[in-house]
Image (tube, rainbow, N blue to C red; front, side, top):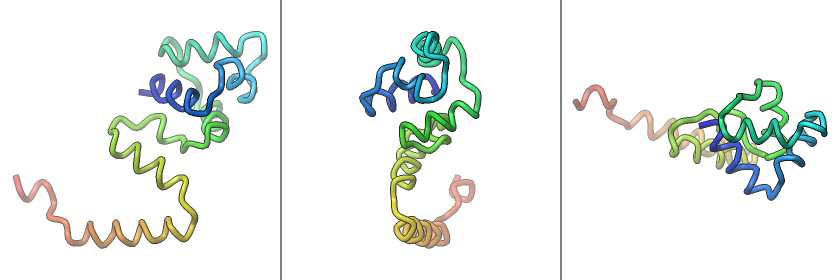
Length: 107
């Protein structure tokens, strides 16, 4: 999932692999090759590098690792909201959760 999301976010930001790698602090001589390996899933970047990449691409770090598409979309939306709107969303989610019938109870 990481490889796919990394490429998706990089393309959305209109950055080349080389440019993203350089911005993230990868040696300029290997930036393009390393980012290519990450996007192909041949190697995985460490968490520290992903923190830099997520900041550059303005995406939450957790988004890159999330398997569920709905959860990933919620993370992306939440990340880009103002603090006040985040509080509103959390309050609404808590209200919905309180009214929700647990999945295990309905099976």
